[in-house]
Length: 253
Image (cartoon, rainbow, N blue to C red; front, side, top):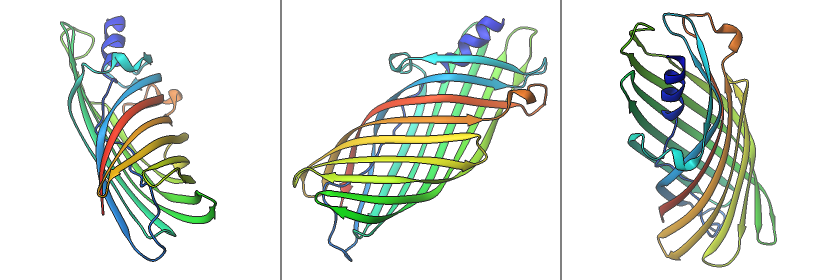
């Protein structure tokens, strides 16, 4: 039973989200506001530990998924992000949710992950074709599971938790040409998680006045929960490294 539960829980963490990084190829003139909204597709690889409570006590299972393992479980996904910038200040918004489903002769499982973020960047340095900014904001995360067992181990459990972090980091945008830019970001979260780190890099292409396209990579470290609480009725552990690669599109004006 534990082997099958481990397999189901592990497979169920695969996801392909609709959220991607938004950036802009050229900074707007100081004082003039510039806006954008975007979405995209991405695939994830996950490595770490997942734990939750059942009627028979808490369990912890190792997760080790490559990106090509994660494409068959997505039931639905939606994500949007946007920005407003006047050259000195950037306001960044992001929202994404994904629902995954898996089922076999032993278990039916559904997992929904939702992440929302708001951040402000103060661009404190412009050197040659690079702009450096200090980023600060907040990120909210929610996990909800529904797992039904068809044997005597347990009937139905609905583990999950939510957490909020303040984030602080650095942003860098390099203008390569009138139509190309390279954007980088790194931040750390402080709050409900023990550790929360985020890093991303995006290559942006703007072939048309109002349309941008990007290819991006992200690395996310999340350490939430304590394995010492395994016997608690509300036990939830998510200690996972998340690596993703994606394509994005944005409308800018």
